[in-house]
Amino acid sequence: MIKILNISTVVYILILFFLSPVYGLEKDRDKIIQEIIYNSISSYDGKCACPYQRTTKGSRCGKRSAYSKPGGYEPLCFPEDITEDILNAFINSAKTDKNPAVNILGRVSITDGDTIKLGTVKVRLHGIDAPESKQNCKDAKNKAYACGRQSTAFLKSLVKNKEVQCEGKDKDRYGRIIGICYADEINLNSTMVKEGWAIAYRYYSKDYVKEEEMAKRDKKGIWQGSFEEPYIWRKNN
Image (cartoon, rainbow, N blue to C red; front, side, top):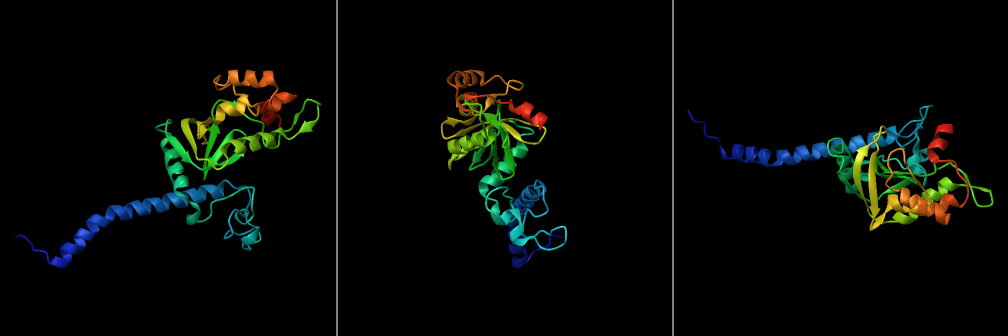
């Protein structure tokens, strides 16, 4: 026997049918946002990444949190911190395990002279190695200067407030995307080496050897004096 449904039951079923995919999508979106926040907090070394966390003594972090202080580490603590750029970058970075050529596009922050970050997604610039943030070099007069900070500052000057597009090539053991990145028409990888604020990372690639030779010839950036190659500095420090 065929059972006849009343009109209210039919309407209810139709609502469930059309809304359930949307509800599922929103639920997945919320999970991704929570995962981004969790990853951001987990990557902070201290106890007080976000205002709502607790210190070792049990008191609320509040204004002592990294989130509340300008500059330095900028954790993502609340759903409203997650922009569409950050969300898309996180989703795209997950795809690179199967498709390393995925593109990432958005406004980024600069970690150091060869690493940029979009939300919790880090991109290591392919084929180059820049002085570390705390690294010093020597200028033409054999005087020490903060070459790591200058390298970072130069990359910031290239990016400014431009949208950055990265072509993902691979992932490293730290989970960072290895990519070639552009700010408008500027190839960040190539320009950092050509202007002497990074060297060609020959161990992984010889793509930017010509740019390095030009910088060395013209004594640009760190080539104005002497320096320890960044990967050696990391090993020793």
